[in-house]
Length: 411
Image 1 (cartoon, rainbow, N blue to C red):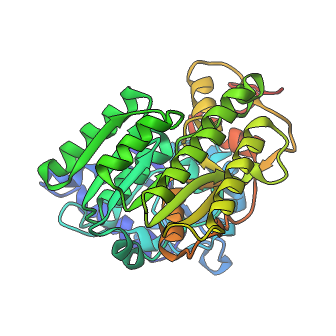
Image 2 (tube, one colour):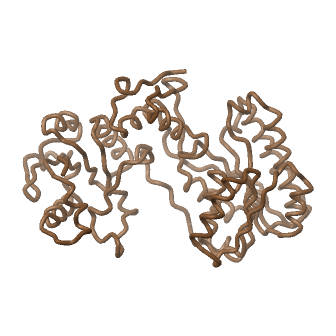
Image 3 (tube, helix red, strand yellow):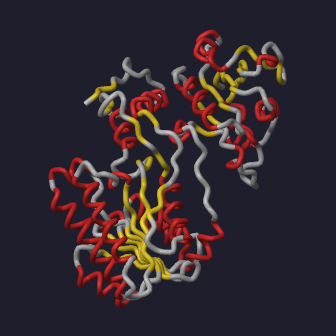
């Protein structure tokens, strides 16, 4: 049992406390998880609650006092129990919690709570804080019915289908009953992994073809279009690492520009109904070779959308920084922390907009469903996040102290 501070003196807190106390006298195995918590005190920003007791546990202060309360009461973990909290307030309180250098657990946003046969109690929904929780906004939801009618019964090709975005695209497409999913990738290992994942999940209920091919190879791509005749093409194949493309700019041109030109013109020639290109916000007034190459790709797509030949509708979606994707700062920060190295941040004042991989892919599917051709879609990602704050919070999530246990170097 760990000495636990609960943030929020509302209904969620009362329910959790009831479940914890009931679990201590329960013979059932599933209630053992509730018995891991030893509630010591509660904090809430409503001054009227200070000094009151909820199920025998006293409200001892407000959220700004959390660090001193953690020290005074020898708290070993915190539960954030305000599922209906507004985005900015949630971000502020979680920042204070993570600064207390004890593990933080969280109840999801109220719309994300699930009560089914395996999760009948609120205490079972408590989970570790994730880096997404520090972004200060709820994940954006899209119109699934529109996406479903768009995908259902269609042959969907995903280039770069083994990558972080491509593989999530494949996962989400699979939910909407496509006639076939065609995974195209030059890197066999990740293509194999997503293929096996789909086989385990769907078995023979899902028609999946995995082909190793390069978008640079016009003849090979032409043969694939000729044989499989896709209805929708999601073009996620690209070189995306900015520093690597600075060193090898012609590879960015060959893979991104020529690859996009090949796949897009072939889609038009083979009467694909819709072509969706994955771009980046680095294509806006580009300052590097990768961004410039992706802007060229956008220009190719916009040019083709203006041609009257064929039936293909062309659309582009731009991403910001995608949490957890290959090349994202988060996996890098995690490796650095786990290996005991300093976390490297470019500059103290650097800010970035972030989105999650599922958000990014939902954006692609929603944009594809509503596009008429020629548009560029961008997700509203809320307010930007300071990278150094993200690094500090991630270090605290590992139970370490920034600049003491783990240094942050500005490079």
